[in-house]
Length: 79
Image (tube, rainbow, N blue to C red; front, side, top):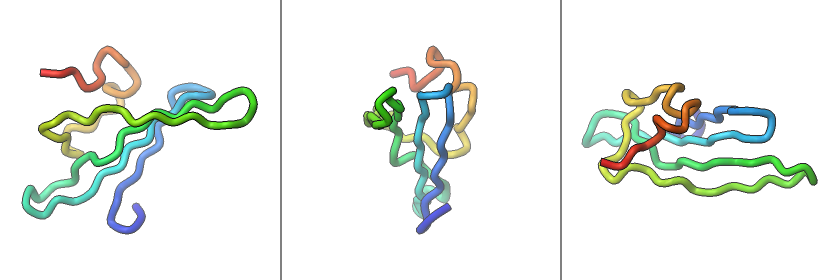
């Protein structure tokens, strides 16, 4: 936790990671996802990152599940 933000780094394999940040929304009395990125460490030592889509209705920390991020077929399906 840093400056009122919960940050998670999920290592999928040696080179692939996901980065998630949650911030507290007082009006909803819960923490909500504000950043969803993938990081790929390249063989030359550089890192590529890409912002991934956050559901329009938002995602609370109560909905967090490692399975969703470790199993891509479960990741943020559009409704």
